[in-house]
Amino acid sequence: MTAGVLFLAMMALSAALLAGFFGTLHPAFDSFSHFRIHLSVLSAVLALSLLAGSYRLQAAAVLLFAIASFATTTNALPRLWPQQAVAKPSDRIVYRLLQMNLRFDNPTPKKVLSLIGRTNPDVITLDEVSGMWATQLGYIASAYPYRILCAYPNGIFGVALLSRRPFAADSAPHCEPRGAMATATIDFGGTAVDVAAIHLSWPWPREQYWQIGELSAPLAALGESAIMAGDCNAAPWSAAVSRVAAIGGLTIMPSAGPTWIHRKLPDFLRRFTGLPIDQVFSKGRVTIHSSTRLEGAGSDHLPVLVEFSLRPDDEHREDAHKTALAALAP
Image (cartoon, rainbow, N blue to C red; front, side, top):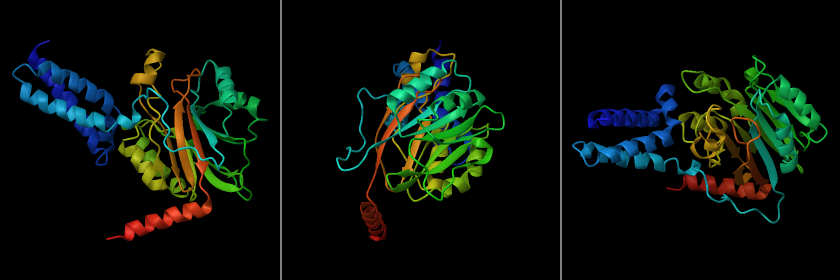
């Protein structure tokens, strides 16, 4: 391949990389942002191959830009050892949430049920809940009696929320437009927390941008303390994920790492070169301590296990007071 062709390819990749930083201007730009890691690496490789030739100045500029772009994604890179965001408290219960995109046609549903049994989460958020999964999840109804399944119009991409712990008194779980979001207020030892499962569509030119608009009301209606998880079909640094967090007043959890790759590609690549599109959000008294990707269970997504606890009400109020004082400080 000639230097001229390599130069054109490098410039095309760097242009796509740059476009991804303007996702707030138009969802078409945001579609490039999800591939920021891949575009950064490919741009850097081509730049390195051109450093010794007549395009060395342009290559050096692209290399620096690729490195800077890559640096914005480091929270989503695969970790060589478990990383704990916040130390686990000794005076509070630590709960577990399991987030899974089941894959509507998963050929090994028993692996999923076995994984749930081994991890024993307190609450489970599920995506791509098809009719087949409605039957399979019935087998664990005694272990997770508190549940809501939300059907998608095509009967494939629904969401579900399962809980060992009861729904709060005087509350009722509910489904949002087209089965894209399920919400329930769960009683965690006397503390009510809104828990939500969400599944966004693919990015532009598909309907993700408009779907987030449809979900604005339920996202904004999440209670003072909430935790939400799901397949966002969007990277954590994207404008789409930032928009979801802003609407709900939520904080996006540092990514557990890549969770999805196309089913036609080898499974072992998912953990290292896939896209980090399964996200967890929280706010209020919820403190997230850790997130771990588990082994695959027949889906094209890896499950994510999250550990969290609930701060005492007085501590939460004190934190909110300090935040308010900081905002008023000159």
